[in-house]
Every structure is written in C-alpha cells, then in structure tokens.
Length: 195
Image 1 (cartoon, rainbow, N blue to C red):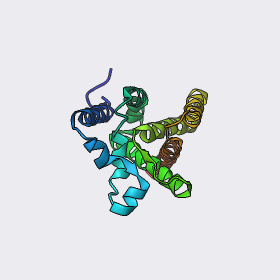
Image 2: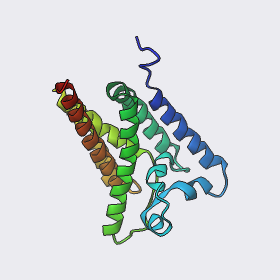
Image 3: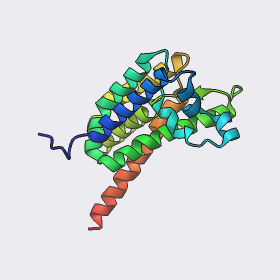
Image 4: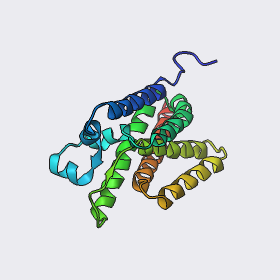
C-alpha cells in the first residue's frame, strides 16, 4: 500500500499545471499565452527570452485537445512509476531537462533547416524523456526492455510520418532523459559502493 510520501505527487502536479495552462490558453483571448511562452528559435535568439526552452513544454495545440490528452495520459502512465523509482527531485529534474533537451534539438534542427522559423509547443519532449528513462532503467536492472523499445519505435515512426509533429523535440527529449537517467543511476551506484 502506498503511503502519502510514496504518492507520485509531482506527476499529478505536472498534469494539473499543464491542464491549467491549457485552460488559460483557451480562456485568455488573442493567443496571449501561446505568444508569450511558445518556442521559436529565431524569436528566442532575437529577444533572449530563454524561458521558452522550458515553458513551451506546458503549452498544447488549442485546436486539438488530443495533443494534451495523449501527453498527459503518457505522463500519468510513466510518470507515476518513474517518480517512485527515482524520487521526486530526480524525477522533476529529469522531466524538465527533457523538455529543454527537446527544445535544444528543435533549435539545432532549425539552424540546419531551410525553414528556421518553426514554432513548437507540447509536453512531448518531457514525455519522451520519460520513455528514454524507463528504457535505461529496465536495461540497467536486467529486465525485459522490449515493450518500451517497441513503444519508442512506434511513437518515433509516428513523429516522422505525420506532419505537424516535432520529431526533433521527441528525439531530443528521449536522448536527454536516457542520458540523465544513466548518469544518475551510475552516480547512485558509485555513492553506494563508497559507503
């Protein structure tokens, strides 16, 4: 039985916060929330509004509620387990850094692209970071990682074949989440062996 201390509070707070931001997007006229917090690399370079690397991960398509619903379902599904396995501080760091990692990948692709003016939003970078983290944890524990690998492949394929989906944010978030989890686990193992 879960105690209150074991409850995945951070996961639930992230879902509530993201849903509240979506509500603000719908209620505040003139795309104000979108314009204030969405990520566009050219715009960030011009204005130095660096917070957009992170805040874009809390926005979702105002014309497509399934964008929010799928991301929040994935966050609920994987976030609860990962928060309990990693602890609250490591989990929130992992999720937020994965959003930033997704934005960095978008900025790198924008720099190399013939159309560097792409604007991205959504929690997908953070969610894919959780996918990457889950895959690393299963591998390090010697568990069967095939189900999560299949999920990653299907979602990445979906990202490439359907327009309007930022495969760059997905890939950047996933690599960030996987790398962070691997480093955190190795540091934790070293700390235990030094005791």
